[in-house]
Image (cartoon, rainbow, N blue to C red):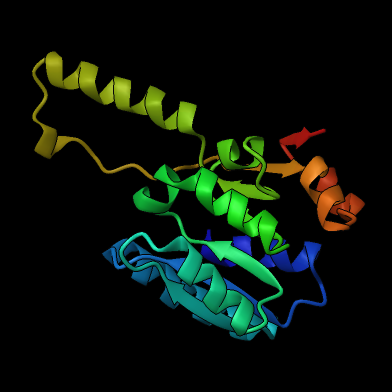
Length: 178
């Protein structure tokens, strides 16, 4: 997923040689940063890793701007998802084309999102709850990963940023927000 998100933002901003990664101190965020570093070398881009500290988004975005980031990759994180409106506002303010993990982020004004489906996860969780209520031991239930992914593109945001989304990307999108 991390590599695919980097590919997608690079496809929209092909001139981007410096991509900021907004991360947190959470272990899953750090793992995603490691994956992003591997994918970045294959794409020929330099990553600017900015870890959010003490909820200081202004400082994090100031660091991205100081490092001349040309695009933004937001790691999948509970903290960043909870504060997604703030992240979207600051990305717009600093004119950073950004990719997020949930479709809802693009629906809220983010440029694009690629990830699993929140309703899909909710349905799967309901199946697990049902199985537990019927006596299954949680320890015996298999771990599942997302098998379907959604690409959402916000054309209104693209227009504000002066970006043209490639037709090849638009035809692959699950949702295009006008």
